[in-house]
Image (cartoon, rainbow, N blue to C red; front, top):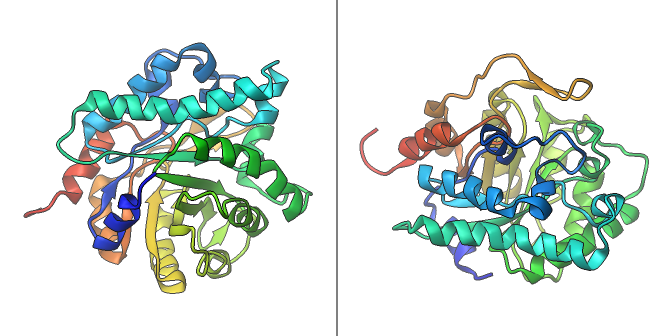
Length: 304
């Protein structure tokens, strides 16, 4: 980890994030219909993870978000993978993104964001879109800290504390990330102007306003239509850089484990997000390399 990532945010140049890891792996023919989701391939086919990252770097992404969203000590333990091997797989998620960056041979700096998904992702029951798990902040902090420590040891450029559904989990993550020497962004999954658990975004973003480790706040895994208001609120409440990477606009049905509806992600929207204050812009579920290429083109300097 270096300070360069934080420095470039302060400079104001926007960075393009990648898109969805799972949809890119599925497009390559991998079956992700299990509780570990894309994290399963860290153990079974890490080369596929590298290829997915590479596709996004070649499409113009500046930042790769690692495949550790659903990678936890508890989740791996259910598959008979012990803590030592689980720590190795968490580190491998960072190294896989680094490997892709080296292969990309880009003419720009490339960055690695270590994904830290919510407690509900480990449960694999869709509860990351509801929050309010029935456990307290202290217990959530104890859940997150070991994984953060394992990821920090692999020296990512930044943590992506992502798809956070409520303020209790945000508070736990902000506690757990302290002292690890890695900057972080905090992004909520939202519905309209509230977290998935129903808290006002002003209240949710305010938690990170004075957190020294947090260099950006924002939203991900939401509808594109939810982004503009969130950008304005995040910038106003925190004064920090803003990160946004919504889904395609389709809706996830946890019961059938499938996506429904139509895409509403239009890369032309990102210019408005940037003008409103967003500095880290990309896509989440169902947003692939083709769309990220369009996002990079829309954010490129020069006449639009």
